[in-house]
Amino acid sequence: MPAILTIKQLHAATGRLVRAAARSRTPTIITDRGRPVAILAAPNVAPPPRRRRSLLPEYERLMRQAPADTLLTDLDAVREDR
Image 1 (tube, rainbow, N blue to C red):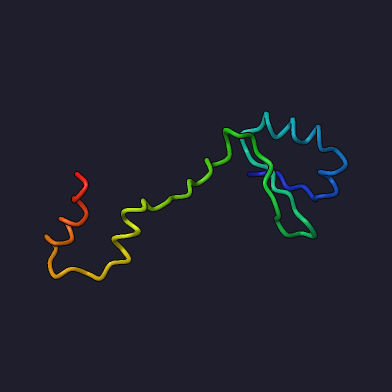
Image 2: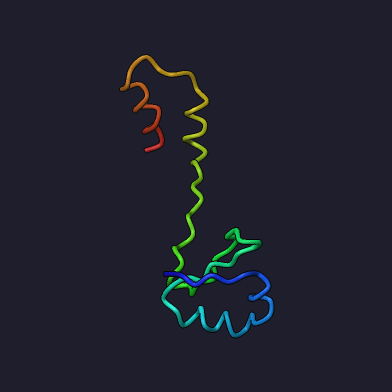
């Protein structure tokens, strides 16, 4: 179960608490007036950040076009550069 600390406790002993979180396998929840506001965790415990996806310019251009009559016409439009 993760430890729970207030912002005031974190402020009073930041260095010690950060070093302890680095050694721990469980995250530490930081609260502000009883509400969770942050999580202090070692990098190997925290989930990796989600990648932002971007659309290829060719796909964006294709999406702006009016739909074609058939699926084969759409596929030809997508494959035209190949």
